[in-house]
Image (cartoon, rainbow, N blue to C red; front, side):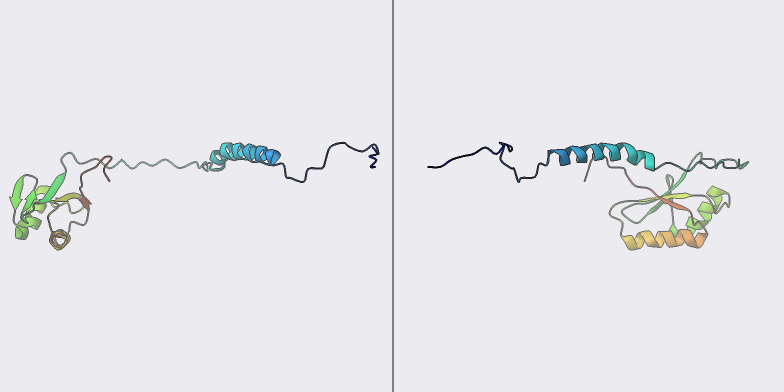
Length: 141
């Protein structure tokens, strides 16, 4: 004989599990706030720069290309050049301007040591501005 008395309390049983729905809601709101605020946090500093009277550097009308073929032969533009005469030919082509950029390209089969030898010849002739030329590969890995 059991008797169940209602003492006027809550009829629902207590639930001891954590409700994570409010936690997820708060996290999503914070994520949106940070996504909006992050680009605003990287504001550039406004600086009033003085004006310059320097003229922009002119682009070379006809760049000078030095090529090394797979058989170790040197070409300045379309003309074959001996290594011993490279400095003199470059001086004639650049009219003695040692600050001219020489665009250097080489065949894939050329040994690294041979490339460095040509670079040393350029440095010995006084040409220190060398631009290395390569092919652009799009989408290849």
